[in-house]
Length: 80
Image (tube, rainbow, N blue to C red; front, top):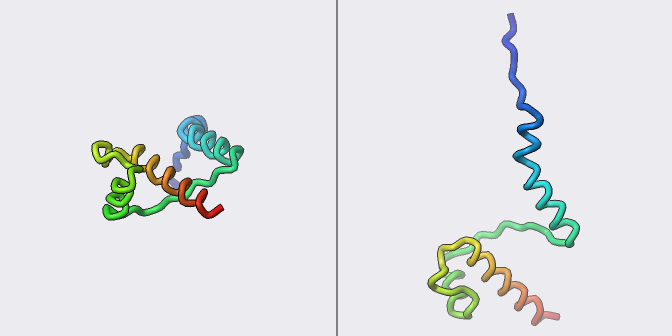
């Protein structure tokens, strides 16, 4: 006799993926693209030295992401 396989409840799956999908669609509507990058400690040091990252906030992922975003924005604005 063949064992029954269990499938994930679609309601459960939908409820866990909904916030991620909504965030994706929101970024897409704003013309934003999500990219992952690797950042070294030396690069975070450089962001501190340039005033983008407060040394007291180092280690806080959101603050580090904000510092990277500000740096990239400023750097790209200089190219225009």
